[in-house]
Length: 146
Image 1 (cartoon, helix red, strand yellow):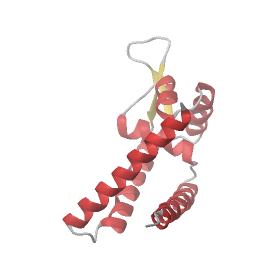
Image 2 (cartoon, one colour):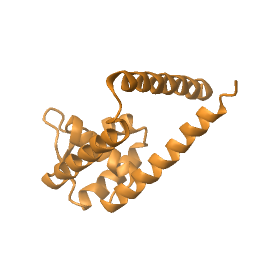
Image 3 (cartoon, one colour):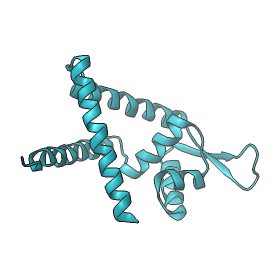
Image 4 (tube, one colour):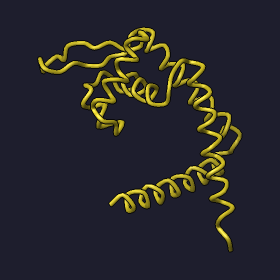
């Protein structure tokens, strides 16, 4: 039995989610990279730029540019690190916190739109299948990167 129809659906979902995300973020004045950094500091708390580089996989210089842009937009600020005089924490401003709340609400709304009508058994099966596909893809990507 051919398995390509399932892959075609995964690829279509990837394209549609990417288009929806870019459109939604653009309406908020964000790029994917800026939203990722803002999401991290808004949902997990203040972080150093070095921590953000590790979390995002971006080069430290790129993180500096992203944080500069977010700070210029009034969404984050740099504050002295509480224990390391050489480091600063990137922290969301009240406007940044409000925008993160909107991102979280949008995330939850989309999950409900996509999966809210599924009963518990169908949701569990869908989640398990997607988790398995994601794990297989992560393994393949790691293998190819090695």
